[in-house]
Image (cartoon, rainbow, N blue to C red):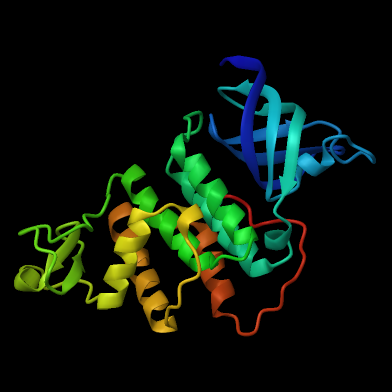
Length: 266
């Protein structure tokens, strides 16, 4: 076990829970060490100086002691930013919780996230600013497939490289099949043409480039169906936060509501 003191890192608070009488355990998705659990001593005392830095869905520049095994510790922060819009809406909270736990699931504890930290942070920035949460989430899901080792081939037909024919997604071939080769996969996913085009578009851009897109409910549902199938069959991931998000989206007429915590990590 090694302890690295006075370490600077960026992080986004995933959740927190009580620990002993006056302390809290806070899980943070960090840029340098993936998801780490921190013990924050005295966090429940009135006037605790780091209170704003350990609220769920807060981004901050932290200084602390990093343990390679066991609990780590936070000693100071340089800046903090709470995602206020997301924090005030239980559906957006569910999207954010899923994004954070999805990225955490893709990396072993202690490993740097590299570009993927900026990916999820920018997605949350855009979500907080009003960009479609499903499309942001789908974009991150597509990008993360590479980290999970199942990056889809979306630029052309896997077999003949043609781009001028209708396409469908094949899990068997790990990407797109043109119409001439649909017969080679009886279990192709029967995606709509607009869904394929949307997948290709999201794969080419970063969250900061995502603007307003007029899409039908049918196309968005079809895209989510395709990605859910890939994550279920090829990644084998079943996150509690994804189940919670799906349950939220099935509830009619949800009203934005402030709550103290996001769902805990898986």
